[in-house]
Length: 289
Image 1 (tube, rainbow, N blue to C red):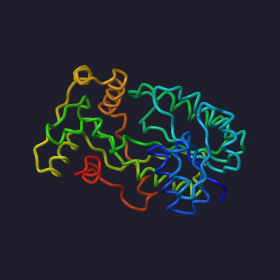
Image 2: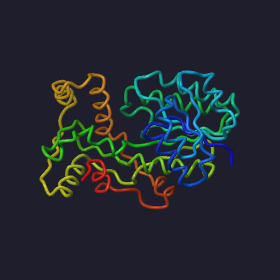
Image 3: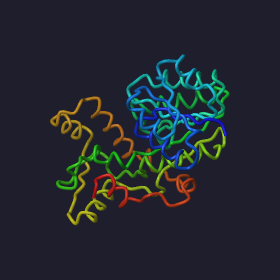
C-alpha cells in the first residue's frame, strides 16, 4: 500500500482519522498535512509523517502530496473560498500523481432542498471538480455531528430546556469519531472509486426526541419549543452571537425542518462492523452525562 495522507491532520476530524488509521495499521503508511509545527508534534510522536502545507498554497500542496497514493480531504471551513481551496487540493493531487481523493461533504437529500449557505454550493462544485479531474474519488457525506449539539441547542439545555427553529424535522446524527473510523476503514481497504457513501447513525431523530433523550438521561423534564428562524436570530443577537454564525446555524435548522437530512443509510454500520452509537449514547457523550 502507498502512503495515505490526511489533510487538516491537527483538526478535530482529520486528527481522528489519523488516529483511526494508526490503530488499524502501520503508522508508517500515514502522513498528515498540517500548517502548525507545534500542533503537529503529537502526530510525529505517533510515528506519523508530517507534511506542511495550506489549501491556499498550491505549490506547497504539490510538494506535500509527492509519493501519496490516497488523500483524505477534509473540507475547508464555511465562509472561506472553499471552491478555490478544494480546487487547489484536487489539481495538486493530480499533478503529484495521487491515485485517489476522498472528500468529506455534508449530507443532503438532493441539490435543491433548502441548501445551507456557505456549504451546499461549494460541496456540489467540489464533487463536480472531482468528477472532471480524472482522479479516482470517493465522496463521504456526513450528517450533523452529535458532538456539536451543545452549540446548537445550548449547553444549558439540560437545565432550562431549549428552543430551536427545527419544527418536527429529523436528522440522523452521528459522532465525528465513528465517522473518522469509517473513513479510515475505506482508506485502508481501497474504497471503490466514483461513488458516494452516506454515513449516519441509520436512525433519524427530531429535536423533540433529543429533549426526551436528555430527560431520560438526567431525570429532569427537559422541554423543546419549536420557534421561528426570526425568533432564533433575535435570541442569538441578544446573546451577542456574531450575525453570520447565527444565520449559519439558522440555515442548518431550516434544512432540518424542511427534511433535507431525513435520509438514513447503513453505510456507517457496514464500515464499522457494528451499530453506530444511537441517541442516548450520543447525547451522553456530547453533554458529558
